[in-house]
Amino acid sequence: MLVGFVAGGRAFEAEAFLFDKDGTLVLFDHWPLVMVERARRLRERLGLSAREERRLLELMQGIISLPRGEAEVQVAEHLGRLGVSRPLGLVREVFGKVDREFPFEKHMKPAPGAEGLLAAVKGAGGRTGIVTGDSAAATRRNLAALGWEAWVDVVVGTDTCPTPKPSPEPVLQALDLLGLPPERAVMFGDSPADLAAARGAGCPAIGVLTGLGRPEELLPLADALVPDLSAIRLSE
Image (cartoon, rainbow, N blue to C red; front, side, top):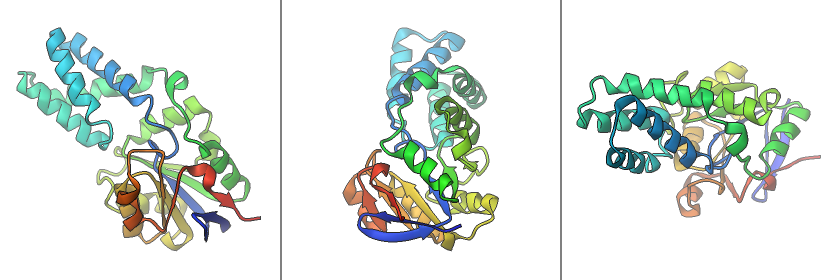
């Protein structure tokens, strides 16, 4: 059913509430630690020197905001320059192992208002989805760590939709899974890519400032801009 809400002083209504993950539903705080663990495991597998590990970590800390597939390729290219053969398969293997074993429950921090909004939308009869630049598999493990599985109906990531945002394809895939058209949806995100994907799919785009996007980057693409998800108010 359609759920009314107010964002940035404007009234909207939607049945499907779609969210980016990192920077929108959860903060980026845990990602530097994830990158440290990925670099450590690659060093152990490859016998890298301390200097090589530092340079690898410098690269990885600089690509935190990239879609997962692009980040994997950049790390693999770096390792290839060090003489590692077939590095992409190794990178994907190590990243996947960290996904399964990193203690996300200790380090992930929900963005302000995220938990309350997910629960409120579900309680009001709305549908929810995550459209992320991370993998869907890793995202589901994140949801389990946060105890949010019951509040999210569908997850679309780089392993289920190979064309990342700002393409509208991930948004359209989420809506297809929900069985709803774009005109009954809204997308929340912290980056220009999130908002461009929403606009390309034909649904309103709400920018949030809990991630890496700056107001001047988001405003041209946003139907409304809010400091965080706690500023979203469902209609009575």
